[in-house]
Length: 411
Image (cartoon, rainbow, N blue to C red):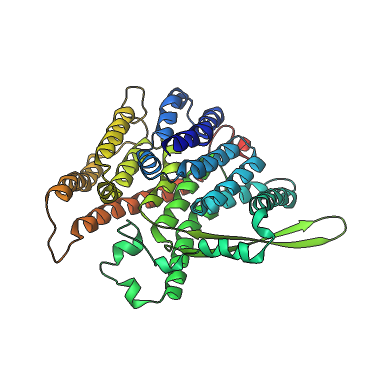
């Protein structure tokens, strides 16, 4: 099984990472020529994702395949191969439906590009046909039998698993300490609330990309969109997106409805989704990437301890820190952080370091057996909220500080 994970990395994730770094550096996404020197550091940050290493090589869940396909789709967009990107992202969705965390970012960015071209309807239609063709190819073995297709769909919608599972650092689990969501509401109103919260969370990022699509904005949008689903979506939420596409020809006008049905699972391992775009922004936002990676890994700490992977946890965290602070790294560049801000951010950091030891050495009170898990969840959730507010702000600020050179290339 270890060899199958390694081979999946070598065949899917590694080539996609190389393609992304090449497209990123060639296009100058960060807007600064001096960042070309850090391409090897960027590649190391993308490949050395501590959470992905622990989950895929400890649990054998093959997230590297869906994330690799998504990364290939992102590289396709940066290199202006939108049709290839559409096909790769469709494959990622069909491999793991959690890839739909990125759907609003892809849809908003591609729609914004299409609307700025000479024949927007034709451009939208080309993308639509690629998506439909890819889905039809993947689902072809099940389309001959209605029962077989429905069995697959039913297994993709585990509503019985509830609003959340375990102590995941999202909104519903964190606030459930004060508000007992599962006791107060039935499944249907909970699904509607989580759907509304998720849409409201990613809507600003989505609108910005439709309004002003850019490659750097697209990377921010991927992070903001995936954060929205991680923080607010239902454990087994079933969404049905209806995208109305108008197709014009000489003879007639067709109205096409494209239904993309997907289910989102939210648990500790879902943090892998927002971690991917965070690593892609490592050159542009080195502090954000390092901070987020640490707390994402810390949010999985109880799971790691239960699975007896503590030694591996320490090893990958140490390796990440070593490369992150390497002499050729980019950690010292970027946004300057004031001493006051650093003092505020240091408090949860010190608490997290203390909790690493407390969790292993001290028994929690019998009345509150999951006290330490809850504290870890609170700390990580607070940091995730701060980060998502910051990245939404940074994405919208791109409209006031447009890319000075080569901005037309993005279209």
